[in-house]
Image 1: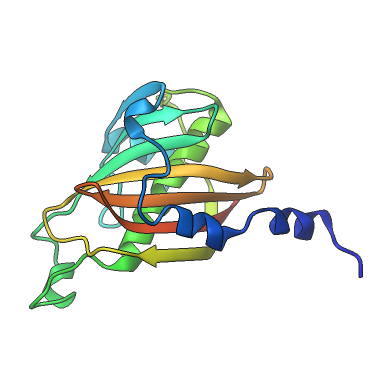
Image 2: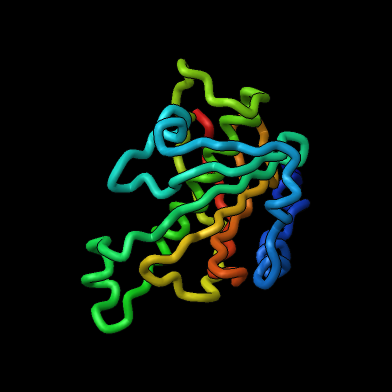
Length: 186
């Protein structure tokens, strides 16, 4: 049987091992990132296509272009209508929205890696990407209304077309979610 380069590359990363490795500890120390970022929603809107009400990253706080790592944050609005139905007696931020937060942070990372910069240019254009798959995810702790979520993402692979990243949502030093996902950069 012939194995393509793409199939061979896929075999080199065992995502389940990667995800299990980061269920309890951060992927990296966000305080140790070599470059600080001070990007809010206006800058984020220039580099990723999502907009309210599904823009789920509030700010970018640090980056390491060499290691391909980025940190950001999101404050979960206690008045968000999602809590009316998810769940009325025990409000929890939806897991699918948590995956979207991590995915959006990862898209921000790919902008900076592609441009090899730590600033968002005034003429920046959003990364044109489409999600191709959620490779895996562990939901470990609920994210409650009013939580401040630390978001971390790190590049795993990038072929120039397919990009994979692993990311986390952390609240009060507890890993709430770790996931790996893939997008096609168009």
